[in-house]
Image 1 (cartoon, rainbow, N blue to C red):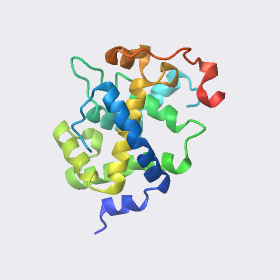
Image 2: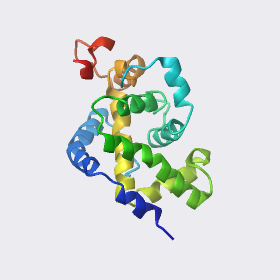
Image 3: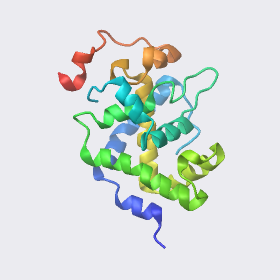
Image 4: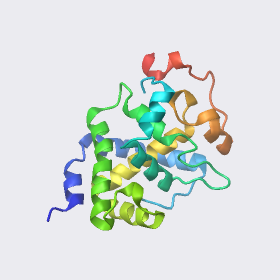
Length: 197
């Protein structure tokens, strides 16, 4: 029988590995900045109505479930859904500077995650309870690709927490408010997004 994790590792692009090395310092900085202790070790413009409809479909439902599991809301802090992490991820994957191999790896992660979920629990990930989701995520983190996929998803959660709202995350500056962060000025407008300059 084919090992799902070994097959996933074969699809891990070099660009993701290079990015993970470069981004480790960035992640450490973001974690220190936000004071968050993580228990698990693990953009083109679109109309909001169209985007909202798309986020109610796969793979975005699964991305949202993974993000919410990794970064749940508490009484004192916003969670992944509060910071629009799925929308931010979607916008980032559709931005002009997103590498094709990275995008493919991130999107294929849902396929591999659901493959493992069905192997272990006979259900897609979004149909699992919290305990079973944790089991599946812990299993996929045992592979190099799974660990890198989870780290990448976590990175984009933190970016959604700290980004300017013009990019789809951090609505009304909820992340900035929570972290008591004063963003730099001037803030970008829809016509002055970084990739349009």
